[in-house]
Image (tube, rainbow, N blue to C red; front, side, top):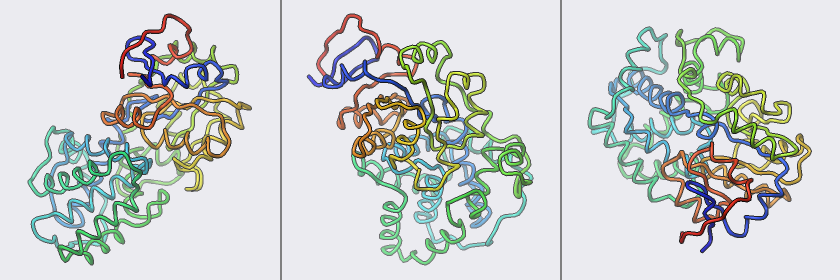
Length: 369
């Protein structure tokens, strides 16, 4: 069969088995790999959608934890490295599939004094009312149909436009996108500014951007993140990687350092790349983020550890540009296993703390896969 079992929760592609022992450096994704971001980014996606739907269209509702499966599904398509894109698409789908075309009631949103109410509404298990469920279900079906291929916001907006034309709502959808604004930086538009303030909180906005928050004064969701990896695991991996460990992530450096805390000591930060702080051409799966990180480490043979298709595509694209890289997939995304096996990921681990097992030469078990 194609995969070797190296112990419970760890499988390796047969042709990649020896290459794992040649790795000089290990480079990590952050969200879903080093930290659990379901309590931060996923909640921010839902909260920002709720705020914008209510403030711009009067559509009051709750986006519950049942939406997380949709968000995870978007991530596995490889083109949704940025949560701004996921949130924009979620809003578009709900407006598109509302019972009747909702009338715009405002062109902007005021300062929000009841942010905790939105948090409570997004802490429920099930979304409501029905118009939200219909929009989420429609988008979920489109995501399921796209599994196995690469899809980004641009491709999905083509699907939205086709449905909007069918329903006679294309003008409304285009007007909505204009209201949300460009999705390029913190102050590029309404969605990005609101999102960063929900996610980072007022302290984070001040420290990262040097400005006062426009819409919200509160603690932010970043503190809701939990570490997935343990320090002794990083130490063990570092002992097996002579050129060291680094991070190549779609998030910014400030929030990455805030979440990792004491674990930062295991990484070579000057070699790490944080694409949210760089021009958009460094956004995954563009290979430059990984190639640049490898170059800074002085490593010719690297392992990249991630949890989504965009991470696997990043490695494939880097190989196409001459980098000797292997990919290890972590199964924190419920849709990842099938995709990783289908595309021949070099190694797959059930959880990130099993990573040192890939560098050991103990008894190798076999099981059909």
